[in-house]
Image (cartoon, rainbow, N blue to C red):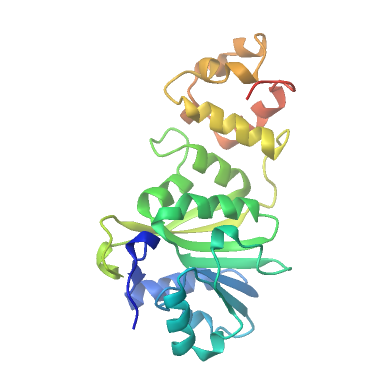
Length: 255
């Protein structure tokens, strides 16, 4: 068998009903090339590797799990990558889908990788700590709305699909989990550049209790800051508001 490593955030899915729900959510979109991140004990892998007409790969950091998976599923030979997902290059040269029960200790980093891969990503269906899943899907005005919400929703449609209770895992985590699906937006909002947009959003939420006039002072000239929009706080602006605001940013600034 195998051991579970807390240092890698390993909580392996063991509830077949949840497995079926994830598979259903995945197959509601076209899938031709598929990467599973962190297959662990193979709860999803046993089904994914058998999907007809799908070129499948999986990436796993833990050598012990790699050995176990290859023993349990010999057809994974040549398709199971022993790598760190956060350091790997894109696994396919064509558009692809990502699925996984993602390690909680790198949840946000995984979502930011999806942003980096957005030009090639068809869909991602993933399980995260519920708090992270909710942040990705949160709308303006909510306490969970922040940098992750705005950056993800600028480029993706984010759907919160369902909760997953601790008892569905071995060992049970101390928190609830949530499954989300992200699909690239066909037409992201117009913005000066993705880099400027990112700086704007991170700066605005970096001091979220302050008005935008105070939080964004380094990024705009004095005249622009007189607009009543800057009386608001970051969580009051929509994704489209941030995108439109990016065009007014100073070209030369200290950010």
